[in-house]
Amino acid sequence: MMTNQLICGDAIEVMSALPIASVDLVIADPPYNLGKDYGNNRDLKAWHEYEQFTDAWIRQAIRILKPTGSIYVFMGVRFISKLFTLLEEKHGLLFNSWITWHYTQGMGRKVGFSPRHEDILFFNKTRDFTFNLDAVRVPQKYYRQRNNMAGANPSDVWQFSHVHYCSAERVEHPTQKPEALMERVIRASSNPDDLVLDPFVGSGTTSRVAAFLGRRWIGIDINPDYIALARNRIGQAGESLDSFDPRVDRTPLDLPTSPSPQLQLLDSAP
Image (tube, rainbow, N blue to C red; front, top):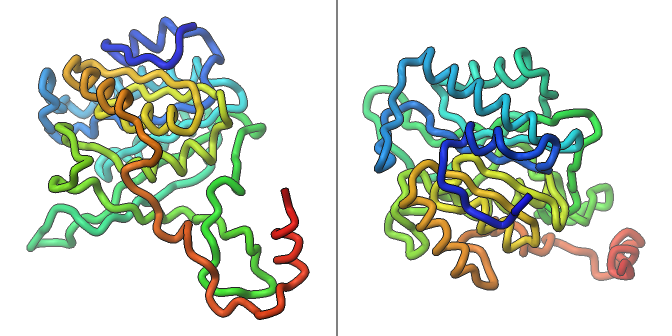
């Protein structure tokens, strides 16, 4: 099977041609059925049709996922509960986490509260799945003897800014995701040389980050303009990503002047 490639086509059809149990991690950011214009298609179906579409691509994603694999699915609030039911009850995946991605910029409202988050559902195929907590730990804000000084679990509330429309990194795609967000997912749920698949690759963020982190990847999109855009982004991959969690470089405050045995052990680790 060819990897490290972008494929222009229908996600369901392309995945149906891939070998069974061949993918380590699926990251899906499908259309939310909110009427967005994606160039050669508009994200607007009757809700029963959208449910059928969702069920069909999930079925193929599960078929190609390895037993140790995981799937992360981005979704808006209007369909998130139905998506959860499809993943857990209909397709028998094992629920892991309901992640809330909180951001500072977003649509403003005067009647009701302004939305400032999206949801990401994290499911595993079996109980024997890849999860690299040490790869995504966040350094502690304060030194405490009882804390794990290698860092804390990031929790299920993530704070990453949108790729703002004024940013130099912004491309012509309506739902571009920050690379730091994808970095956390890929580091946590895959290993170097694993295969990461994005069936709705859009601007190419997933594939670019997978390549940056030494994973193999496949990106699928029905819009040829987005495939070209993604190919250009991956071809320009540099030595850093377009965003990061500012907490990852911090040093815990009020560190003791004499290192504790725990810190000494960390300092002596290879």
